[in-house]
Length: 455
Image (cartoon, rainbow, N blue to C red):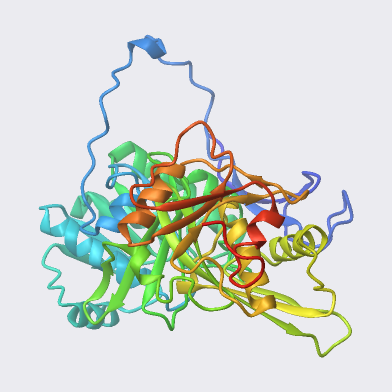
């Protein structure tokens, strides 16, 4: 039986050293040696004499799920919590990660299940104070303030919980590795041990992850590959509303979003999220309403644009809710194909409610908002704008047109500006006046006072 020991491996070339050094002798890269535990295994044992089944012989029954107590969280998880799954929740500090998981722990415990809350960032008394503010008694929630994962199996055998919350993964460690908690080696080893505990004993693990200044989860990318579901907490901490977005989900659709409202009683699900992002409905210059499709639901959101003459030599392109590179591309198409002189104009874009629009179907609404602010005239009042914009200025069809138009009609919209070729499916427009356009030039005619409207 060999003894476990630690070595330092270079992440660039694979060179290993018995101690940590700043520069790799193999490839001359700096700060690339990562600590890992090697050895600790005995002689290779023969494979067990068991029958290996065919894929067709396996049962295809759905995995039983249980509710988190929050309809929006259940939605983004694919219909509920899968036993034995590992869910990684990341977000900015103070956005509500611990609040949401404490509420989830309370809801799960009310279903007769035991929950173990491992807190590494707060003391048990601080967690108790948050629970009192939220009105959570915590009768079936066990609180643990031991960040050492080496002894976690002993606590699991003693408590036997169905769900375990680790707040956060950057604060836990294993004794066999000498590096500090949160390092690459610690995160990799801790995630591996949690995965073994979750899959072997069918326990659900919720992990809280820190994020970098760029908004990505801190630590190695391996951490996201090992877990089953990755959920990002989005939105402004100073705003009432929060967005949950799944970027990975083995048990449901990815890129699904959930809308939550921060209140005195904690985070509450929003039944009709489209209504909270609509106020003016495109009746002002520089304002349009777009129909984005997030996961499995259509979402109507207001887009605001402001175009002003630049005070500097280089015009600014600033955006909140869309990528800056995407704004620069759309502005270039609008200038080239739409004939707008934007070379000496600053362009500012803001999406209502802190939503990040990634759906290409919102391209047309964004460029018309810019053009509307440029001409100081509203565009299609009381209407929703749907369409993808090509570099040649053509308006391309988008999927799920039926669902987008039905959501617009349900919210009281009377008009819709859509691509001329809406795809194979015919848009369902009960009571909606639909205007079809094929190019950007045709779409610009629907700005009030700039060419008239084809009604």
